[in-house]
Image 1 (tube, one colour):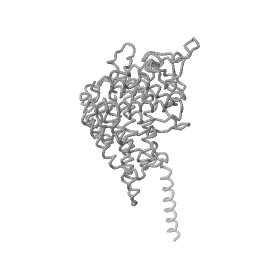
Image 2: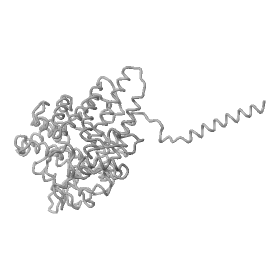
Image 3: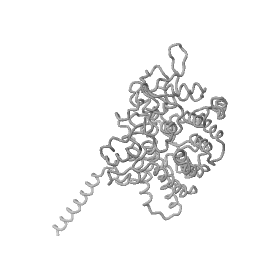
Image 4: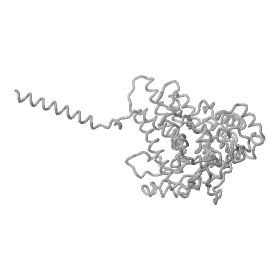
Length: 482
């Protein structure tokens, strides 16, 4: 009997110890199961961080849009993306940190079983919203590189995914948006507080989806006018109605949730950037009221502070030129992913192209300019005065609508470097300045493919490079026809 009791005690102690050891073996900082909502939030934060910062290892688009240029290290302003493997860094973040999280969020949420109709409806909303943000991210990839992995992307068992035709990806993105818009139900909930952009407001996501559809449609216009017209006209009634509809991520005052710009411009203690003469000269010529929000003045020695931009691509002493304005150095400055003024410029262009989207090109242009001025702290009166100048008024500003819309969109998209660079590529305005020793033909129109793709996915890389017309910075994307 004693022997039996002893054996039982040993068994119980061993089982208990094994349980304790197993618990101790678990890495509580790397959970095996993550809620889909958490992955969705993480993707939103990663996407906003990628768009917001000015770290030259990741986001060089403030530079390429010529909002600012470099002081000592001028590689990026001279279009060197290889030294810091910038395409590799962006490619990895877009696929791994955003698209993969969005896919996994959707898979986890879709696998949940609900009984209440309201929960089932919320589940459908969550899946649709995750897909909408995936569409946004894939458009970014296409607009950055051209042909990219799409149908075979995100499969961890396939290390050599094929590249899909960029125009075909655009077609599929529009089809996905149509499905997502049809599946969203604004009378029901979604992510709630886990949605860092809209707090779970499905009606706002419907507006975002339609605005994104308009954006994709108008980007497609020179490549496929019929498809662009259909997309823009079907989206127009549901797009953003004011700046209150903007898709934004609000940042906080304490790390690690500050705007990356604050980390790059302030916390780092670095003095890497100054304003360019490209934008300073344009804003001064137009008496643009936003200049005091965008930039600081500098005293050149005569006691009279002025706005002065450096030569794009040259080595510009930090103390000799205007710097980025104080608002940009606020750690709580929000990231804007898609905005009302952006939408209004798309609508102005759509009207000029003969699409039935409502309103006049002039009204949409004025709305876009006014929204931007007010966003940066100006008043409606400031906007009226600005638009009243012959150099700005839609009727007299320039000889073509491309120059009118392109110039004012570029000025309004300050701190939206990637979008601004994309608009320049589409409309060819404003005229950007090449770095010293280069010409207009040297200004990049895409990223080259990541070096890792060349070495690890060589056959598909070679095919893609040939398909887009050569893996060069100056190869035009399929929608960039002029």
